[in-house]
Length: 386
Image (cartoon, rainbow, N blue to C red):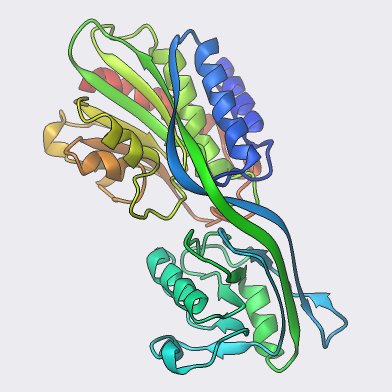
């Protein structure tokens, strides 16, 4: 157990060393290289970085200040994932839910808009649509509010809006503190400067294969990309650490099975017309028939309930887990496998503190022993299923 925990800590510090692992960043490329290097260190010779098309994001800096109050920075503010560059100042135009349904009749051109309405945190497509509409209508900037029901109120989620299709709109997000500040100074003039842009990019899935003597195949996976501006320790360096250690522990086990260990890029990306991440991997290998997929995403937080979400349980033996069994969630990399009829098990912690997608998602939120226990449970269940 001590060696397993030491390995987990090493993986986490190596992956989280880079301040941002969003698509197209130096950090996500470094994480992919570290994962490939570790697979090879653990004795795997068949290791591939499989490329696929995405839109990368470059971020330089952001300034968001109250011009009428000594140019003090608006608290709790970040740029949104895939924001474009902007330099806009003025009294913000506040947009309510009713306004958003009537945008064509509102003059937003060249203006800084505050999107007062915010939906459920899972409604990323809705918020992306709002940004895309404002972009087409010529707005210069849009400020979104990080919702409290889905994310912590203590820090903003940089992924609250993440459309890679914006042409010129600068987008920012504020946490509760920033939203309250703006609400109490509505008539003040603000300046929002964002230096950022998007570019065509090739992302990488990292796959290590242990060939078996028989015909059966299983895959274990996690994603190494992250929302911008943080260590992204729980989401999802924790899952990557699990996959790396499973590759080590299962390398010489169940030799009749072919085992694949995958770390996917672009899980935090907004899925569009082109397949990305695990979806790209599945579609690139239609000949492969997996018996099951184990997914590890956001595991081992200090406070929360450890669970395993199971999809297509009728295709699996009875799962007798130490964790609470819950239905398939259709919310991560397991979705791609479920869509082609592969049963999935997603190990996950339902956290009490919703720090994911925010700068608060740091190594300090994780319990190393809980992650080690998760890995041991995955090994045990693999033996039962196989």
